[in-house]
Structures are given as C-alpha cells and as structure tokens.
Length: 168
Image 1 (cartoon, helix red, strand yellow):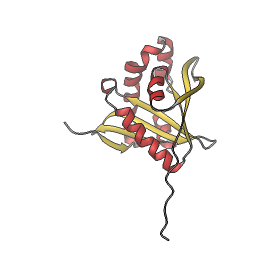
Image 2: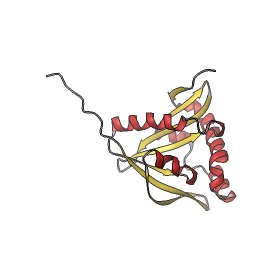
Image 3: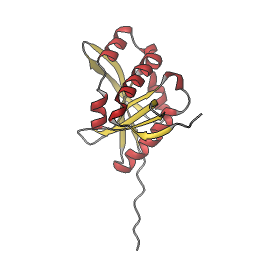
Image 4: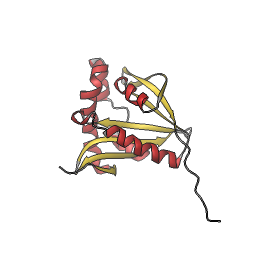
C-alpha cells in the first residue's frame, strides 16, 4: 500500500475536499448534532472550498486524487492565526492523520506568525483539541441558514519560533 502524501491543496481538489467534508461530518460529527443541524451544515457549509483555498493555507493527506484528511490555517482580519477545516475521512479516524496535519499546520503557522492559534471546534472534536493543548474559551454558533450549529471557540499558545542566527 502506498504511503499517504502530505501536500498543499489546489483548486483541482475542490470536489474531493467537499466529499471529504461531507464524509467526515456524517460519520464523525453527526452523533453530536441534531438532524436539523446536520442538514443545515451539509446544505450551507460554513465556507465554500473554493473560498477556503483562496484565503487559507490548506494541506491534505492522501493517495493520488483521494484525500483522507485536510487542515489549514489563515490569518484573521485582526492578525490572529485561525485553524480551518480539519476533516478526516470516517474510515481513517483514529489513525493519527489529524495529529500529523496539525503538527505540520502548527509548525507552519509558528514560523510565519508566532503567538496563538484559534479555532472553532465541532462538539465531537473538542476533546481531541484539548489533548493537543487547546483550551475552550467559550461557546459559539455558526449561522447556517436558519439553524445555528453549536461549536466551541478554542485557543492554543504556540511556541516562539527559533530566532534566525546570523554569521558574526
């Protein structure tokens, strides 16, 4: 079996990313939400994948055109680093894919903008993020049509990047 490849997402991945999002939501997140919340999320995703690829640094793990996991980050208007769109294919959950991607995304964000990283977690993923050093700072809602989707605002302090040494 070929090893999973870590690579930057491209616009040619939009369909595969959208399918991954649906798969992950229906298989992993659905247990924590009402049928109405799930229907709203699947009908009105919080951000279209094309917009996400325009505004964020998105990374994927997969084989060929199949994407098994994705994660990204972007700077908010206030300059904070925001973790975006962490999804894992249902049949790949528990194999360390999200942790591998978070290691990469957090390292990249630290190099470019040390400080803290924020995210909005689904209810089912909160424990995963807490084990990774994130802490809940409040409840939030994603407004998807007429049905608000419950979530958790979380933050993690990132280590300071090593200063670059110059030759004396």
